[in-house]
Image (cartoon, rainbow, N blue to C red; front, side, top):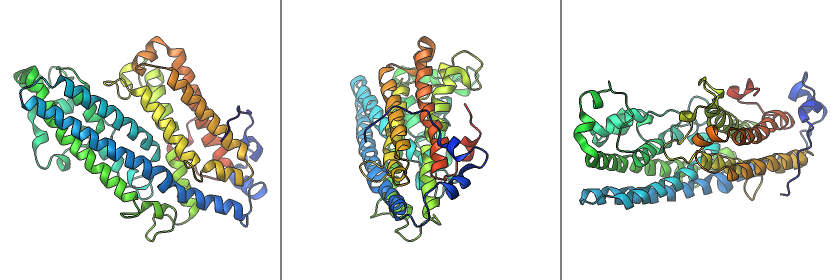
Length: 401
C-alpha cells in the first residue's frame, strides 16, 4: 500500500468527542447491511491466523530450535574442557535471532499467548517464553549457584522470572560476576566465589540448556495451538471452528485490536518512556530500566515490535484493518497509520546502538522515536477505535501521554 503524509485531521473530532463511537456508528458508520464491510471483517479474522500469526510462530519455532542447538554446543564445549568462547558467541547470535522473532509475536498476544486474566482464550503461554518486565537476574544467579535448575520439577516449582528468553539473555550475555547484593546468600556464604570463573561458565551453560529446551517446547505448543492440525485457534478466531471462545465477530475483532495496543502500553510506555525517565525513576534518564539491557538489543526489539504491528494491522498480504477501513469508506486512515508506522521504523533503524546508551547520549533522538511511536498509538486509540467502534483496553483508556 502506498504511504502518504498524515493529514492532521481526527475522526474523533468528526464523530464528536461528547457523543463518541456509538453516535458515529448510527449517523456516519456503515450500515448493518453493508456486505462489503461484513466481507472485510470476515477476511480480516480469517487472515490473522494463517497469514500473520502462524508464519511468525513457525519462524520462531525454527529459531528456538536453532538456539537450542547452539546452547547445547556451548555446553558440550565446556564439558569437554574447552573455553567455549566461540560456541558462546554462536549461541548469543542464535539468541538474538530467536528474540527478534519473538519480539514480532509480542504484538500478537491473541488467545493462547495472552493473559488468562485479560485475554479471551488466554493461556499465559507468552510469559512461559518471555516474561519481561517480570524479570529477576539475581534470582537467576541464585539458581545458577545452587544448581536448582537441574531438578526435574524446576519449571513447575519456579516462577517465570527464572526461565524463558529473558533468563537466557542473562546466562548468555552476563560477565563472570553475579548481580546480587552482598548480603544475598550466594555472596554472603561464598557460593558464587566457590564456583570460580570456570565453574560459573559451566553452570550457566548447563542452566541455559535446561531453559532453552523449555523455550523450544513452548514454541511448539504455541504453534500447535494455532495450527489447523492442532488446536486450530486460527479457525476459532475466524469463528469457522467449533469451540470458539468468541461470541461474535465483533468480539474477535476487538481481541485483535487489543493485541495491537502492545505498541502503546509496552513499546511506547515501558520500552521508551521508562528509560527516558518518564516512569518511577526520578533521574533525567534511567538506562538500567531498558529492556534487554545485557544484550544491548533493545532498539532491535522495538523495530521488531513495529514490524509485528504492521503485519497484524495489514493482515500480511491478505485482509487487514486497512482493508476494513477502506470498505468502511475511511481508507485514508489506514494509509496514514501504515505511513506513520513506516516513519517510526525508519527512525529506529537510524538510531543505532544500545538504547541504554542512547537515552543518555542522544536523548533528543530517543524522544523523536517516542514521538513517532506515539503518533501511531494515538491514531490507534483515537481515530481507529472511533471509526471501527472498538473498545480500548482498560490499561490504555486513561493514557493521555
